[in-house]
Length: 380
Image (cartoon, rainbow, N blue to C red):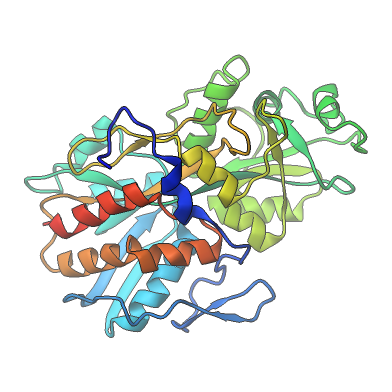
């Protein structure tokens, strides 16, 4: 089926998005490239790396960006390095904004970003991508979880309006009537809400802002395009891991991060009242139902997507992100180009995407994956 900017992704394309309950790799920096840590601290054997084509990959490849995809990137790097002797992939999870800055300064071969490049960022990339520009290549999807720590409350339900007001310091107590109405029977304490947000520029922040601006427009008046936290108050932490750790450690806290961080830290997550028949839990399977409605807005070799944050479809979790790998379509450095192409060929391959499902992320819909697979070999 030909992809169209007018047509949503077919639900049938989401067959690849069935996700297991396995834990995402959480111990980056391990020197064992054939195993990934399991939930109980033991080791889980990763998918065999025998089918990875190294295709001239050699030396070191530097990359940086999205911390939401860091756990997925760790899995990919371990498998790729196990298959391709002498290759070192160094990915720094410094946030989408930091990754794009490094990319446009020529410091990294590619950047990970939870939001597509802005027009001005594309223009800036042309200084580095000689004869070309930076393009958005979607690589992994998943839900942005709203995690919380509240003793005695195991199944918290919120809607877009209450989430907006909590993060905008308009709701400051856990037993606020708006929260109580959504959670009848819950023993909500008369205690102060500790809301945590990202201190760094983040595509996760931007996607949350887009959701709140769309689904709770009357309560969230901040710039939905901002990658920096736009509201006053609250407490800041660096990266998804920093916010997750802060929520895990503080009673009465709430924050946002990619689902794998909630799973790794055993943090309870909010179910969202979207207006559907039942509140929707944060899960990769539920996020895939929202991603199914995405439309391709990019042109040519750019595969930027437009997500439906206001979905009320049954079982569709609305706070989602798609992480892009951003690379030059033309003008890549000759010394790193073979490794860049070989690595991205692997991450978007069936084998690379299968690793995501095993890790708790949402693999790309089949049609999008096929489009990216056709583009990567053309990078020059």
